[in-house]
Image (cartoon, rainbow, N blue to C red; front, top):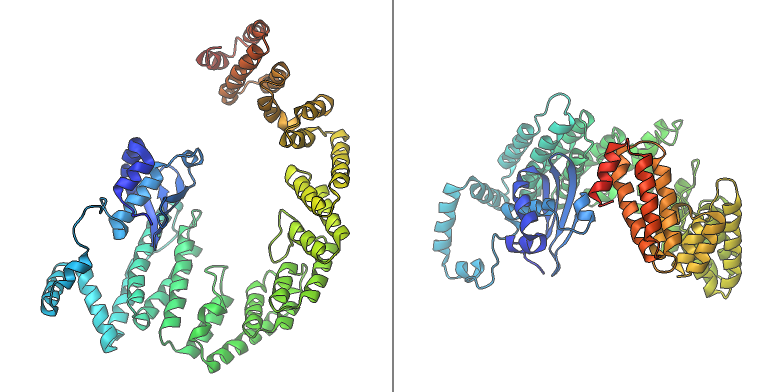
Length: 553
């Protein structure tokens, strides 16, 4: 387990990124810390999403900026880490060699001394005073005053009027997150009933705010979802009016624009049997009212009906709901059947999905689509190897690429048919390569993945390397440097056809690579002649000449 400290961030980022990260703390928006994981956005010239996880020995992180993609611990990660420390979720320095833990120090005090310290802190710090008030309310059961205060706090924090544009949305989201942080502390302290009205108001208010906002960043929607989830938790942990809650949930979902997403499972623990029956009747009434609506307009009511079926463990009713509409939800049906041991029926539904063409590696593993490798493996276990081959052949024919080629061969190897399937797949690749606008890119890629440069070059010479030209050239620096250089030459000629200053740096880079390849082949003089001719031909493109000069060309 790592401790989030400034020293740790400095070690991960280095001096330069750490220094820059300090300047970016002010741009941190929507900081949320759960356990030892922080989520936030950076809003500066661009918006980046950031995650930090220091639960393991080595800190793990994610940032959507290009610098992170290059393998660096960027300034945005530093900024979010420092913001988390400032919010009390880390320490400003390593604790190694520090004094006793605070729990040990408090243990040295008697009850009267602890009370005196607490009274002093409450007089100085409004936050400490609120915690004391909260704990007192939770003990006495007198939560009405606290509930009114919290609801008033929501009204004030979310008093947003008019359209919220993109830039303003970050500030509104920041205020919403700070509000929810505050409300969550009361919930964590065991005062669910006191915080319920405030969270209900926050949930409904944030939905209205999002409806009149440019929430391209998704931050406001995320805050609305969090408010809804906290409200559901408060209902489960508290003692709400179950019947009133059941009516509200149906009405809220019926009028939902699609967010926040709520489910019966979020609230059902707060329902008694009469409340659940009220919920059922309200959903049934909506079902009748929406009988003539299309699937899009029935989306939420169909979700509610399915959730009731799942709650009742009525698999047949769930299948009935999942199999209606234009596209049956094969994946969801099969999942439920297997979960209750009805494998034979699940296999029948799998056959239906295959027959309907609802098997795709690109879409697979969802409610509507099946994953081809999983289907093929199930067929193999059932002794239906040929059906498994057919599924993977169909997937390769639909998506002829290295991944689907390997999937087919891996399966074929298990059943002793690898050579036959390799021959079939390569024949299909050759057919596509010989067709109009086809090329040998996939054949080159397959050969390169096998480490077979001879075959790769044979395909490139006969059919063209296509998009794999660079991979072939980079793999052939020693094997065929002159031919590799010619691949670069053809690509450069294509980009020089029309003047485009944005391409000149890349052209210069490729020419530098060509020079190295020509030199490896012992043909440096030929490259010098080629470069001189190129400079003469395009001498009027001054930006190109400058790019070549910068690369020593």
